[in-house]
Length: 124
Image 1 (spheres, rainbow, N blue to C red):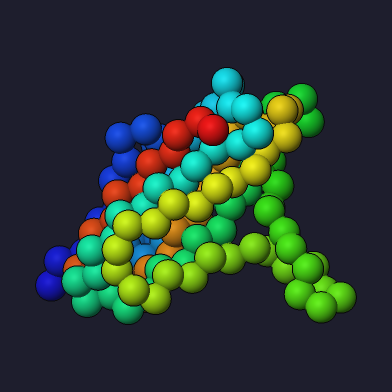
Image 2 (image 1 turned 60 degrees about the vertical axis):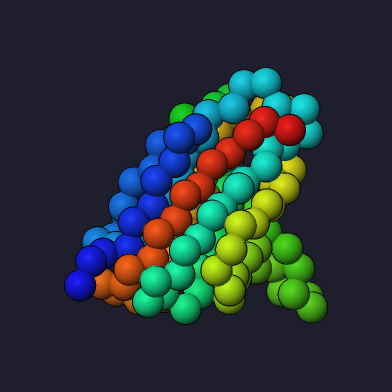
């Protein structure tokens, strides 16, 4: 069985674990208020995709990722987008001016699955 595959033409895509967790890193130097994350997902044998975002702030550290968070009741949680159907999606990612790199972590549900993902960022 083939592995899940993730590619990008505008960012650096890499497998974090064999074929279920991928990172997509995009250095942005000219964003207005953020970037747009585009994902094209062909499911194959995968049933869901989850996406989280983090940023790197060079004036604080060139290697530390800061997670994007939201409130769930009174608890702060990492914001997670879950896609349950294959298709083309657009996710706006707000950024502060000092945030110059955004990292998406994309996780698919099936090890050894046959999902195909194309993920790209564009400055907003």
